[in-house]
Image 1: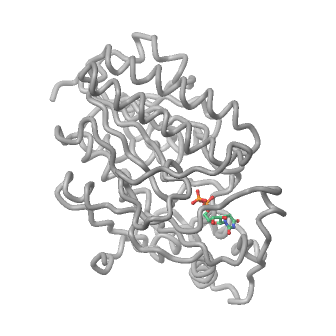
Image 2: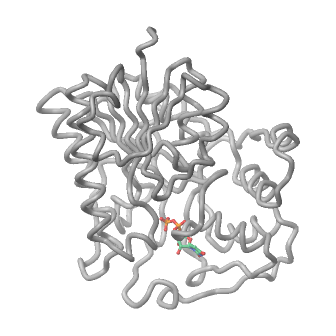
Length: 346
Ligand code: UDP
């Protein structure tokens, strides 16, 4: 590896991007982060930039605007394209802006990666499956969307377009592109402003508020720690046979949202009854559809990277998030917040 081996991460100051940057820099590469700070935050990468001065650099810019900027792409042989408008609330607030931003940016980044001869991983989403009822969701499943009058589906459709762009360029031009569908990912630095359930529940529990469980809380999700997710992404882009393929990345341990609330209350030492059910339409307006169950099949990923074994249990991550939200001394936390091995996957 030469000094020129540089990994570009778009959305690098975001929740997942900043953890990925930490993982990549540990492998000895230089890392260049591009982020327009729309949902990313400087504080997410402040420590990384000071600890690895010279090896990690940050460019505050839109990934779309930097796609033709040679200085940004100099020495880049690997790209993780994570920059996107995300979060259910944001999508519902302005679906048109989200679609334009996500698809045009992905198109520009893919083409720039092609010109640079770099391998590129694009972050798609479990939303691509829409309301596909066959569980676990496997990469070749039919995609099932609701009507276009329900704006939620626009996000999954935009991500599906991103996937088509990447796979088409991989097939026709030999672009070294890999697509990952990220399922519910949790961990430090995730923010709840745009709807994500875990940071919202943790904040509510710490404040002593009731946890807002939408609907009857029987909908299920599987939550994977961001450090397990980013480790898998880093490994996957090094696998030549992954090129031109789609991979689910996520946990296979499903919980109902009601159970999740119980876990969070326990982690926070809060009374078990502190739960408030809210009808979906009070939160997101009439016509909102929430996929009832979401669970990935991860055999393809497991096979490609020679074993996908998440190290963080849900409770280990929640305990850490509660401690962080309480402002626990980070040095003490680093010693206590060790991943606990999971039981074998079923
Ligand atoms: N949810 C909830 N309370 C909240 C936020 C979300 O009950 O304060 C529910 C939401 O309706 C969904 C689940 O938690 O069923 C996961 O929501 P999130 O937005 O985190 O992820 P996604 O819907 O994309 O899986």
